[in-house]
Length: 154
Image (cartoon, rainbow, N blue to C red; front, top):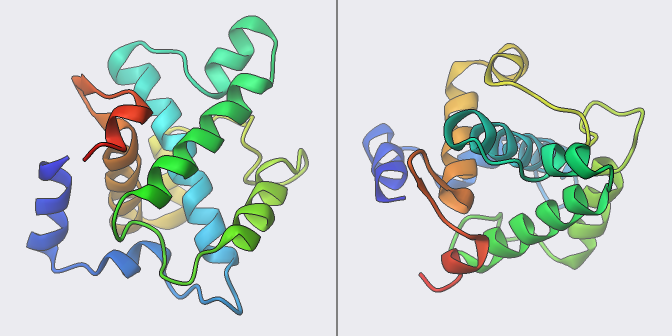
């Protein structure tokens, strides 16, 4: 986790930069980036650690609740970590973000898998790196996977 935060410090990137130009009045960009960070966390857990979490756990046993549980736990962990979420984020934003996450026809449906290359094509290299930092800061770094609850103690 410290490696991720040192990357941010080296790049002189504001944590608010994760959320782009999103504001309380126009928050959609933050929702989209957050959801792609969640989907990246699922992909990285699978490709780096061989762990089926989120969507992949849901596909393994046919129960969407595992994907739902993962995003809820990820959001809970992110909001409890100091300064990860935008200062203006509140429970109403949780609800709006979940609507986007569960829109089966949308580009950010939580049950659609993404690969790093997909994210890079959509957001570009720099933003992809930021989203990967967010994903691994909340979920864990390659080779050193944390349970979501463990992150809440730091």
